[in-house]
Amino acid sequence: MSDFKDLRIVDNFYQTSLFFPMPAVLVSTLSDDGETNCGSYSLVQPYYVAGKDHYAMLLCCRNSSNTAQNIIKRKKCAINFFPDDPKYFKEAVRLGWPGDTTAEKMKDFNMTLTDGARAQNDPEGKYPKIVAESFQVIECTWMDALDGADADGPMPEGEDHYMLDKYHDFNGITSPYGAHFILRVDKILMKEKYYDAIVNGVKASDFPPCPVDYGYRDSKNFWYHKHRRMRAELLPVRKTTLASVRYAADRIDPTVHFSDDALEMLVNVPRIFLPTVLRGCVGWAKENGVTEITSAEMKIINDKRNKEKKK
Ligand SMILES: Cc1cc2nc3c(=O)[nH]c(=O)nc-3n(C[C@H](O)[C@H](O)[C@H](O)COP(=O)(O)O)c2cc1C
Image 1 (cartoon, rainbow, N blue to C red):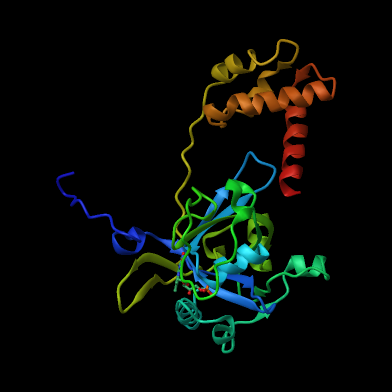
Image 2: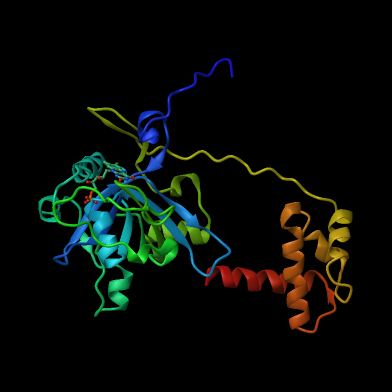
């Protein structure tokens, strides 16, 4: 602790009191006139990542922004990851100026708007366009039922903040000037080069050039990081022993036995996940009337799991 100083925590601490790396993205939404509005955002992150029947992102924004109001009114948005290029970051900073209308912001937009997958799949529906230059786009729908936020109305004309008796804890209008949106992930769209890398195996040169800002800004500059080639750090190899996998396996279900060659295939699984993996194998064995799981059955189970992941 002796070589740290205790910094005062103030409003917008991620901008004023921290260096906090985050992606710079454009969130596209639909305006009252049906035009696509692009706002610049960094406070956007994965929120539900597993264990539910859907996945979600979290967006934190000023509740008087075009983006917040459009999400409250029309629920749909797209998170556009534009590539690192000074002309695009300059544009993001211009689009980040508070108070401009959609018409003012978008008339000289220097990127290209195009239909996303949802618009293509549902020609009658209304969806914000996506930014064609993006290397990836997440198309989302606000989960307004969470935290009772579906009762939140648009901001009355002429106001610059909400004055409510009670603010939500985590979804919708969360403070006089703030809003949080839990956004269900409807589609992940990826440019072919990066799609191929994810499907076939990613190398250092395959990472997209994402502009990363550091949260910190001053009255003159918005700082961001030029994309650099990635470094790889080898994951630790921590093998458990066959005996400890056997110990866990023999305790799952007495009617299903694992052979040693099957359990050899699990010595790399972190201990904390082992019961879940073993239970999955036993579940498969019961469904298929199998009482002895060997490496052949393990291969079938792995292939099935890989296919499900790909789906
Ligand atoms: C790179 C960058 C990141 C930003 N991140 C956020 C953010 O995460 N949340 C927020 O409320 N405002 C953020 N801003 C400010 C908004 O862009 C600004 O409020 C803008 O007016 C929003 O546009 P809109 O009204 O069209 O939604 C950011 C600005 C820039 C330039």
